[in-house]
Picture 1 (cartoon, rainbow, N blue to C red):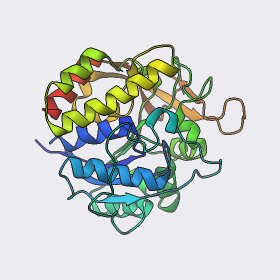
Picture 2 (picture 1 turned 30 degrees about the vertical axis):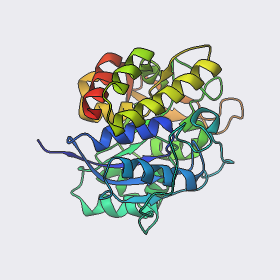
Picture 3 (picture 1 turned 90 degrees about the horizontal axis):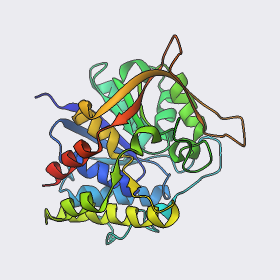
Length: 307
């Protein structure tokens, strides 16, 4: 089996942390680097959180590069109410043993992609697309050199989760998402239409808790925190598992159904800022959009890897 080389750009974040645990535990993926950005919490905290999860997984071989501290244009937006003050729910917090790797995230993305054969590296983005946009602006050749950008972001039929029509990751930096969509890079997008089908029920969390090892305990803690917050804030529903979806697709594509579309992002309207226009009838699609997810299969994969 040849592992898929990926750079994981994220803003941990409860569900980013679960996605990192899944990526670390999956031999199908060659994790070249983790790059972080401000998003769910501040850039300082997301970089720390990525290193905490890396340390928990025993994968200090993977470099962590700190990236953008703010969006391209708009004022920063955070989601600490859904992720806790630390960004990692109720997990114990301490300063990681190893620091971030020297060199900013944007240049790290450029250097890693250019050092590998064209079309071999996938950039996974589970936070605002700020680092990806800055890398494409600084090095336009990346659009052709990347295999794809596989991202969690956007919404169509589900509506938004931060405004009526915008999903948080896109809303947090819509101008960056617009740069990515217009760059010509291959995009695979997992929006709320798919991720809302993948819910952390009590039974699914209990199955992970029953594994009884440190990684499973951490994942269960993160999922339980997210579930409790979601049930308090959003009409008593179980928490959707957003950010592990792109990672799960890279490991097991059969868990999802994708459709080609034209993907564009609204940047000019205060009312619909960050809205993703997903047009399946477009003659020249620029993205693949996830429309269905196998929740049982995804949680079975997560449980298997955490074991």
